[in-house]
Amino acid sequence: MVDSESEGEWSPWGAEEEEHATQPLIGTPASPSQRNLASGMDDTRPTIPLVARHSKGHAAQYLTAFAATMGALAAGTVLGYSSPAGPKLMSNTTTGPLHLTTEQNMWFSSSMNLGALMGGPVGGLCLGVLGRRGTMLASTVPFVAGWLLIAFAQNFGMLMTGRIVTGLCAGITSLVVPTYIGEFASADVRGTLGSGFQLMITIGVMYAYAFGALVSTWQLLAGLCIIPSALYCILMLFAKESPYFLLSKGKEEQAAAALQFFRGKDCNAQTELDLMRQSLEDARLNKATLKDLAKPYIFKPLMISLALMFFQQFSGVNSVLFNLTTIFSDAGSTISDNMSSIIIGVVQVASTFLATVLMDKAGRRLLLIVSASFMALSLVALGEFFYEKMEDKTWAVNKLGWLPLTSLIIFITAFSIGYGPIPWLMIGELFSPNVKEAAGSFATMFNWSLAFVVTLTFVPLQTALGTYGVYWLYASICVVNLVFCVTIVPETKGKTLEEINAYFGGPSSIGITNAPEN
Image (tube, rainbow, N blue to C red):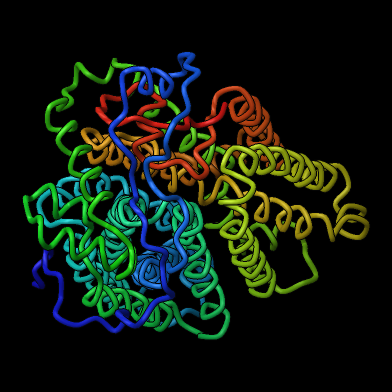
């Protein structure tokens, strides 16, 4: 295994960057009155910015983020695989020994969430032992092994094992990649780089949809899904370890070299390194225990993060993505099931790319509000179609046959600009260093637990409430979500991790000039 803490003797990304203006990255340590300002207390004295929020050269950061988010693309193929593969496995014409029943397909679709659920604690443990880069590299081996199990599955047990293993790797990836990016990214591009995680997830989903329409067997599709995992491994071989992790292990010189690489050769990285060192020292002096979860600076961001994860999953997005083919078939759409799925995949990629552009301009909170609003409206419309279909199938299909695809396009667009990327991005932003690994692991585990519940209960809820009732249930949750975003979620756009930590009252000996906006 490659040394997770290695700096690497050579990098294909070490090319000349644009010149930076040499300037100190932080100001002088703050007085107690300046720290009071960070906590929302009144103070009329002028403040000095601590960390430069804008840097002219970001090439190394963008390229490293691309390498890391290749893991998100690999995870996206896991999410998207069941939609085209499920009908092939249930079809009487499928090749091979496997023929799934409707109930087995329900477990096949949702089982990856069980693996992802375990990925949270496993990833959290590996983060501290192997490092961020080392954890990503280590996860690529079971990623490939899981796809091979699926591709060569001779029975339902092998198929489920492969889904759980690939789900485990997706869960690890969903924790480690946002954490890694959040630690090396400059404040002015952290939102853009962080939202790239969800963008690559959507590209991975579309990858599975597109190849699922082109190939005739689920085995070949599984084989094609190995390619992103292999690319992920190759690209991360040349990446730098997180400066935060290297500092936490006492590797001062390597941490300085890594940070200088990410900031550019002409930037004064030493002062920012001093800030990181102080933050880690504060974290060590304020090591969190289970009892400390009640402390506001831990409890508040944890509750916000868990709520964001809850609303992300109970928008019903995974129920939609995992069952797109079935939804379009039930709707009686005149467009082929595979083409409808590909259209949704393209829309998801395009709108998530839009989110990466807007993230550091519009801000997290506004995008969440817009996302929740339009998800609610589109789910009401989708539920209305299925209600009218129950009343008069012929009239609904002839007059409203356009509504399911339109509603899903609006839903996926709204989800992708807000609730797709932002909950994962904010895992890397909200938590102070002394609880980041534990709290991030818990939030990730919580998210995938909800994903499993939502996906597994989709069919039973359809039976109990009717298809229209399920979508109206999700729509009502989106309305509650909207109220939560308006009243509770803080704005973190353009704030350093230390500023966000101070906003929640976290321990710090460094002055903060700005707090997240409510």
